Amino acid sequence: MSLVQRALLCAAVLFTTPYLLHADNESKIAGRLQNLRSLSDAQRPGATVQLAADVQALPPGPNKVKLADDLAHLVTEGDQGQATVQAVADALRQSLSETPVPSKKGETPMPYMDLANLVRYEGAAEELNDPLYAKAQQTLVDEETEIAKADFTLRDLHGKKWTLSELRGKIVMVNFWATWCGPCKLEMPNLDFFYTRFQSQGLVVLSITSEEGFKVASYTSAWNYHPPILIDVGGKVFQQFHIQGVPRTFLFDRDGKLLAEAIDQRTQRQFLVMLSKTDLHP
Image 1 (cartoon, helix red, strand yellow):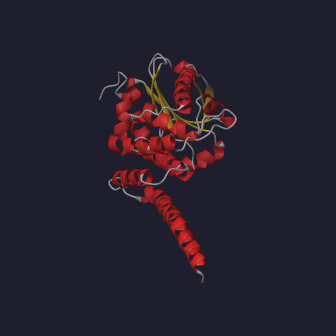
Image 2 (image 1 turned 60 degrees about the vertical axis):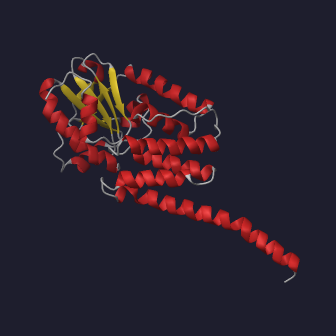
Image 3 (image 1 turned 90 degrees about the vertical axis):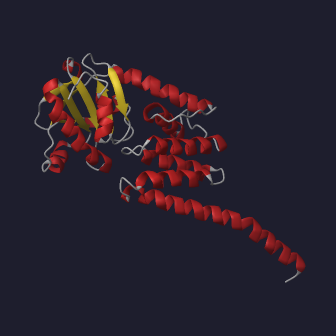
């Protein structure tokens, strides 16, 4: 091998080695993300914070944005603590500031929407000087305005009609879920707990799915679930409430005012925080 060939080979090794190392790190992080749900409630916050730090240590690029955004989808499941949410929001903000995601057909890219969700609904503190992030923030405000005015009539599994506007005087939790959604199933016992505990004080929980009624009835037949399960044929109510992922829960007061919104699975403590905005009492 000539000196020139050796020099070119060494240059190629020096050039490709960092790339391969970064690709390997990204692959390992992706694998740990996939295993995150298998961890216990006690293990998951620490693992999530470490993942957020490892994502931040990656070089800028679309893969970094994707990993940070995937982590943002997982940190909202349950109560992982404010520090955990903040760590993930920091990783997502950094990745977007390094590698902005272009808009396609005027749509706001999902990573910007997810960061805005973490700030508005999960209490993260973030600022990002990007017009698409500002657009995402305004989108959430506009959607809330529409949801506050929404009304619907749906039938439950027993054929009874429920109309949201006719529940004035009640405190109403509107919960969107699906049979295939693991986090939905985890939070439904908590919804059932609060419904049975506060029903006498006027709490109504409406669990809405867009799936076929027979399938839903078969799936829930073994459950001791007391709130009415409503079937949204065609998903029109899902569209009214701008539902892009489940579970999702909205809380309305006795005058029909939108009080709170949960963008993912909530624990009993988190639901209690939402309900503390009402006049319900132990």
